[in-house]
Structure formats: C-alpha cells, structure tokens
Image 1 (cartoon, helix red, strand yellow):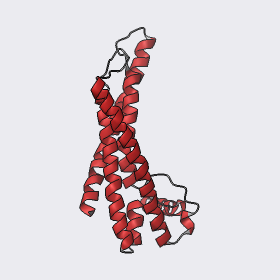
Image 2 (cartoon, rainbow, N blue to C red):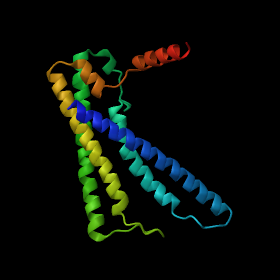
Image 3 (cartoon, helix red, strand yellow):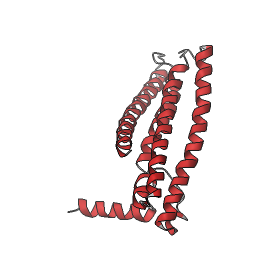
Length: 193
C-alpha cells in the first residue's frame, strides 16, 4: 500500500509541475492577447476561454498533490488540543468527508462529460472547441483525486486500526501553526550556518 502511495505521490508531483507550466503559458498567452489587442491586432483570440479551461484543469490536477503534501487548509483550533488518537480519528473523518464530496463531484462531472460527448457539444466562441477535450482532462484529474483519497483512506484506516497514530498524522494530518513555525525556525537556523 505504501508503494502505491509513493507512486501516486510521484504522479501528483509531475502533474503539478505540468499544471504550473501550463498556467504560466496561459498567463503569457493572455498577456500577449491583451498587448496585441491594444496594438490593434487580433492575431490571438480565445485566450480567456483557454485560460478558463486551464484554470479548471490545473486546479483539479493540483488537488492530489495538495492532499498528499498535507498543504490542505483545516481549522485546527480544536485539532491542536486533542491527543494523537483523537487527531487520527479526525484525520480519517476529514478524508472520508472529502471523499464523499469529491466522489459526488466526479459522478456529476461524468454526467457533464457524457452529455458533451453524446451531443458533440462545442464552445460558443470563435474557437469552437469540442467540450469533451477539456472536460476529459478535467475529469481525469477528478478521477486521480478520487484514487488518491481512496488509497489514503484505506492506508489511514489500517494505521488507525494498528494504533499507528504517527503514520496517520504523517499521511493525513496537517501541521499545526506551532509545528509549522518550529519547522521554519529549524530551516532558518540550519540555513544560517
């Protein structure tokens, strides 16, 4: 199971770098369109439409990386006051509720994609993009996020059953503000030597 998580982590790291590159390229494309429009040229059009697709696609592909790196935001006012066992249960509960939400979004996302494929839906802009193309990439990102949540939930459940609370915290927990500050202080102290 840990090897599956490691491979998923690798795929998520690659996907977030690709998503970042596409976002940077999109920014340059939108900037070029704005500059060319100001100069009276219409050489590039549809950058805002492509930007919308890229935002949706890149965001969903970055979610798995965010989850695996523990960078997701949580309100930890109660979390920091709990013991390791309660934190582990809360981490599992967070994964399960996130899974329910994401599986629901993915289910409905599939319905949107199937409709676009069935009716050969195209964007109403001058680009006339077949909607199944961006929606397929977006849906694949949702599917990958579902996979990530599933394997994390199974692994965290096993760790909780075995009372491996440190493993649960490492896989599904987030750093508290105090832990993050201590880590940053150690990094600064180590970098200053």
